[in-house]
Image (cartoon, rainbow over all chains, first blue to last red; front, side, top):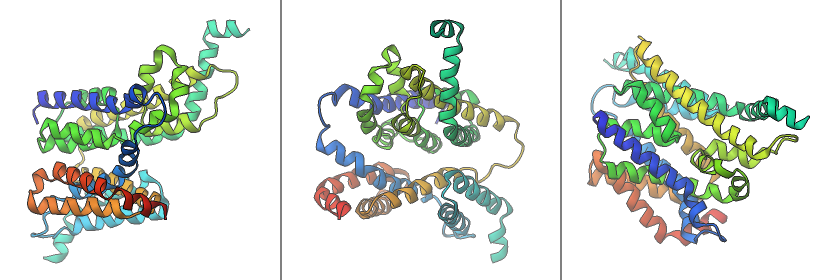
Length: 113
Length: 240
């Protein structure tokens, strides 16, 4: 995206984000919000996050060396770190460092070839 | 005495100190994630001022991380808007528990609403009002300090990106890792697995039928439709 388009996109994102935050103050002043908002608000996060995880992983090249092994190991690393320590910062940065090492050292490809 | 303190700024200082103490857990999280965000955006080829600008006016962690990938993939504005809306949809429920507190903040109320992130929401709804200070001011400083940590982290990351000579290849995995962590947390907090299955199935089908570059919106819209059809089952499944 060009810099101009990025600035426009940021403006759009700022507006939409503020809209979600101001929404209850504008529309839910009296009583409970509508059932459908409560339902979507409660159950959209797990659905959306699942989609976003797949979105993040969709561009892994599976057909060529190292056949997605770097990503597989890094994903397992996030899960292992998170189950062990339960600290999001350790899980995110630990796994990212491992991934950077794997991809920069090209370790897996060397083992295979 | 009280008035003297107020006039000399002592009173204000005490409020800021208390707010700072309350926000220290957020300090490290926002700085670290903010630095990663700044580095990523800089890495994607945009000037550091863009990271600063974005963190000041958008101020939404997950959406900003995603945006870096959106910019790189040249996603249409409409799609950027839709995904931002859905990623931040949860905020629509946050305000509900803060009507009373925010109504006390007077002319600062618009800022309080703007700055309502997950972490600020968590602090404002769980921290007890400290004795001897003006409560609305205390809320304001909590929101302001959190915002400041996020902006500072983003700027540090983006500026550091100019000087860092190490190879940053693979840094973009931080986005994937962030969403996997969020997924693990959600698997823990929901009993029902139906929303995860719907999201996963729709995403994979969208990749097969529509293609990688346009899968996001198709997956999101189709899964929301299916969720609405299965609303009763999902709610029952969650409560059983």
